[in-house]
Every structure is written in C-alpha cells, then in structure tokens.
Image 1: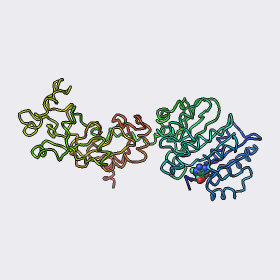
Image 2 (image 1 turned 30 degrees about the vertical axis):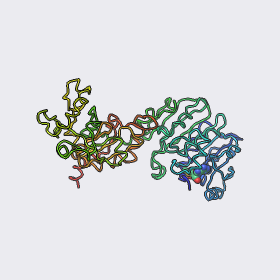
Image 3 (image 1 turned 45 degrees about the vertical axis):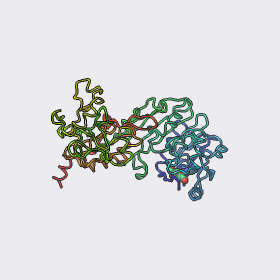
Image 4 (image 1 turned 180 degrees about the vertical axis):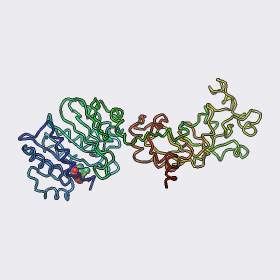
Length: 457
Ligand SMILES: C[S@@+](CC[C@H](N)C(=O)[O-])C[C@H]1O[C@@H](n2cnc3c(N)ncnc32)[C@H](O)[C@@H]1O
C-alpha cells in the first residue's frame, strides 16, 4: 500500500472544521478527497455539516488502492462518488474544479517510486524535481483543481518548508494567485510516531497574503512567509524545533569545532603512507584525511599522511633539530618559501596555520564541510590530523563519543541541520562550525548529568 497512513477520525474532523472556517459550504459546492484511503475526511464532512446545519457538498474521492476503496465505499457515505484512479494522472482533470480539497496525501520519497513513475511525474509536475516526495505532487495537483476562491487543506510532514527538494513547491505557494493561509504544527503523536513533525497546510486560490504559523509551543505568528523558492526556515524555524532546546548546545560540550589544518601546500605535505621513507615515517608523519577521501573510503582511514614538523604539544621543531624531516623538506624549500605565510614571517617549513595539536590529537568526530546530507565519522584513535576540507569536533572531557555520534546521526539532529545550515550549489549543504555550535543537545550527553545519574542510581 503506497504511502498509506490512516488519519485518526478526530484529526480529520478538526481539519474539516478548520477548512470550513470563514467559508461555510453552500448549495452546489464541490469537495475532493485525494488519496482518500478509508475516507476519514468524507466521514468527518458528513458529521460536521450535519452538526452546523450546512448542505453537504458534492464529494469526489480518488484512491488507487482497490481494497481501501472498497472499505470506503462500505461506509455508507451519502455525498461521495468514488473513483479508482491515480490522483496524479491526467484523467483526474475530467472531475472538474473543486471549492474544497482535503486530505492526507501519501508520503513516498523518490526511493519508493519506480523509473516509469518518476518519468511520468517529472513530465507533468513542476514540483517533481530532485529528491521529490509524492506529497509535493499532490499539493500541486490539488491547488490546480481549486476553483477561484477554493481552499485546500493537507496534513503532511512539515519538511517541505525548508528542504532543498521542495524548492519548486515553495515557489508554487509563493505565486500571486495563491494564498498560503496557514501552517499549523501538529503534535508529533498525532500519528502515533509515524510522521516526524506533521503540519496542516491551508492554501486558497485567492490573492497572495500573509501566513499564520501556529507552533507546537502554542505561539502564533503571522508574516510574509511564502516569499519564494528559498528555504522558509528562518521565518518559521525558531519554533519548528523549539522542543529540542535544552539550553545546552553542541558548543557547550565540545572543546573545539573547527576546520582541519591548512598547510598552504598540501601537494607537498600530504603523501600516501606507502611512499614515505621509513626514516620519516615513525616520527614525522600523522595519518590525515580530506573531505573527498572521507566520502570515498567511508572511513577516516585514508592511507594518506601529513609530513609534519609540529610536536604533539603544537610547537614547531627548531630548524637544527629537523633530522629526517629536514632532509626531506629541503628538497621542497623553494616551493614552500613561495607561500604567503612564509612571506608574512613564518618559518619556511611551517604550515599556513599553527595546528592546535593538543586538541587535534584526541578522539574526535570528523565531518565534511560541504555535503549532500549530514554524515559523521569517529576517529577513536585520536591520531588523525584532518585536512582543511574536513571539520573536526573534539568532545569535552567525559562526553561519550559514541553517544554523541548517535545523537548527531539521529533524525532529530538531522532535521535541525537541514533547517539551519546554509545551502551550497546543487542542493549541497554547508555544515559550518558556527551553525553546528548552536545545535541543541540533550542533557543526557552532558558529563555532569551522566555523573548525577550514576550518583542517583
Ligand atoms: C497517507 S494515506 C492517507 C489515507 C487517507 N486519506 C487517510 O487520511 O486516512 C495516502 C493514501 O493515498 C493513496 N495513494 C497513494 N498514491 C496515490 C495516487 N497516486 N493516487 C491516488 N491515491 C494514492 C494511498 O493508497 C493511501 O490510501
């Protein structure tokens, strides 16, 4: 059953009352139920109309799944004609336009679609770009079927307001002839944990205007949110994930979150471990990894080393004591002296920046600065000196590295990063340290908290 998640009757009724607010059904109105499943919304409409004494609209329900359709037809609903159809197919156009559209569309990410479906949807829907989800397409088709002044209300995950793959959906909602009236963040347990961060979106085919956002913490704000295709996170986000706020941030439990070291000449200082002579290897090298290697190897063990004259305390060895390093480096002296840092007074064999070795040479977490999705790797040995394209996070004394890794890879932390990190080209995101430092962390990760648990236990 593609994307079937049943809407509880109380939620369907709540959405129905809301759909009719300020726009009560009139004789001759028409209502559409896309992906109707067992028809909880049609049942809610019959109940609400009877309670408020309004005429039932002419209802049409579209569902692909024959078993669900049979169940829906067996409910004895008086105002609905059922259609076994793909809601995203052109055949739906013959159903005409609607004053109301209400539903809970399927949430099916691109991985759940076959090649033929992807091709078909991509040729018909603007919103079917990149890593689309079926509910983007349901939104597009749904608003397309609205009469002038008609209103649509869907419950979906709220991610479309900021993820890169929903750019075209945000652009659609920012059109002059659509009014994104409201986004209501629904408690997470509305679907017994099946959807992360559900929200109800109400949009009407009427001149664009301001949007009211009702947040989970009960606060309400109204502003210009539907401004264009860029993420709306900054307009909405503060409250989106506000339940994560513990008052403790990643910065509070880290000694350092920084970009790896810049030498000014990686092509000289970085070598494959196999090609480094045995007299250099033991004392003058550290394993290293670049952002590209992290991805390629899927591990920080890249086989590359930095040839390095810095001691473990971060001090640079004197020129007289360079030994095997000096014999090797002298061959590259001309090239190394061309670096701007040398012109600015640094030793010819130093690096562009002094590496904070005391921090770097500790167990830590590595990640790429520009990435398609957040990914983290643990350096348990603590002996890797990351290159400039790799960020490293050194946890504070007593923070459990594995627990922190688990948290950074959790759905919740990823949602936060998606909502807060800047976008690079091609949908890539930038995991900048200044942003990540603000990531709220659960108090279980704080050493004092772990200590107090041990005491109370
Ligand atoms: C999230 S469920 C919601 C079902 C129902 N509206 C409810 O609220 O309980 C989405 C429904 O859409 C149906 N569906 C998925 N893709 C469809 C399509 N292309 N056309 C019509 N229905 C579809 C599924 O079978 C499923 O019943």
